[in-house]
Length: 465
Image 1 (cartoon, helix red, strand yellow):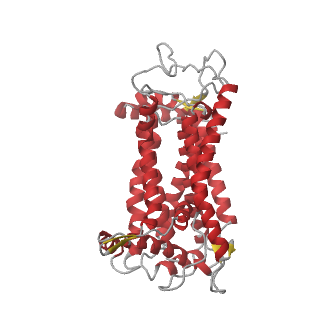
Image 2 (cartoon, one colour):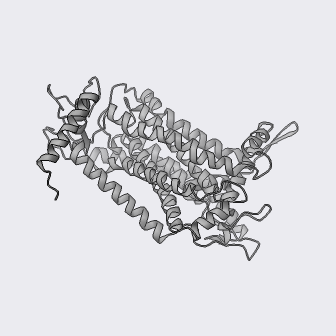
Image 3 (cartoon, helix red, strand yellow):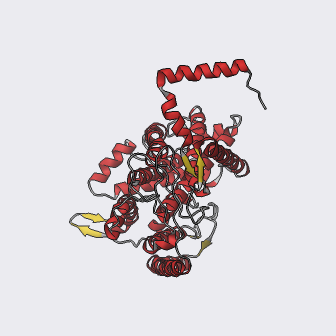
């Protein structure tokens, strides 16, 4: 353990006084270090996403040094980076698994906030910004998968261009604007610019705003009766320093170790045949399932009926448009949900206590129904028809065309039946559990400065802890 010598102590004190005289740091640093943070592990899901994003930025900066953003040079540069640059394959794996953990942590954090009602007033701006970040991260993931210019990435990109071209009149112009001509055209350098500069630039502004500014200004929500005695005399948490700093540092180290372990044990593109090989125009698409965070949209495209509507000289593939339209409706519903729930319930006051899911049966049942719907859509990618070419790479699960058609019809029925059943069962479970487990007494907040203590639901001006 290092010992601070008297001379070093005087020097540190002199530096602190010098900064305080010029910046007034003591006025905001002292209350910031005393700010209370919840102690439950679920509050660290956002921190996990933040540290995965930081590792994404660091590894992405390394990968850009060796990547050639052109249609002909993208795949050879990725191959050379993986096989010739020392540590290149490991950094690619770190980047890939960081993205996976980033998306998973955002989904888990979003579910925690939704099911506990942490999005309610006055935290609607944090919820809206979080949903925008979620959409940007999904778009950024799609761009990153396309950049290696292999068969898997370019097949998904070609599918996206097909959706654009199916839109009458405007689709052709939008496709030429994005691709600069026929596929792949100038797609790779434009995707590279969006993936490295545009979307990360927005994320670098939105993530700190969501994680730091809004959270520190509005304060954290608090669990009802978590580790609090019946009298409710204290808060279940600790100050920012050293309690939260220590737990946050442990989360960062654990996340880095977990991502490094996965990058070592499960390298990205270890085999360069099949769907990891270079893309050739006109070649058959690879028999490979998409990444899990694109599986919902891909499964919806497989399950959507081939409906077409003819209007004059235009044929509108309505069935092809249903999945992206449903995804857009989902994000719009997420954005307006806090205001819709407030209008339905009539609760217009401030909420600083989290709900137990069983105490909000309607919201909990709706969330479970949506998760079941996404699981059914994702299941549409698990089984594929046996490829006609015996030399092509085989999917994980294959079957005959007749059995596959039956699976598709069954999943189409499940899209309507299973979410409704999940909603009814979850709502009944919530009512039963709420009757068997009465609500615990609410904790009382500990004031951070002079003045009387206030209850967690009492309105108070200014930032809350």
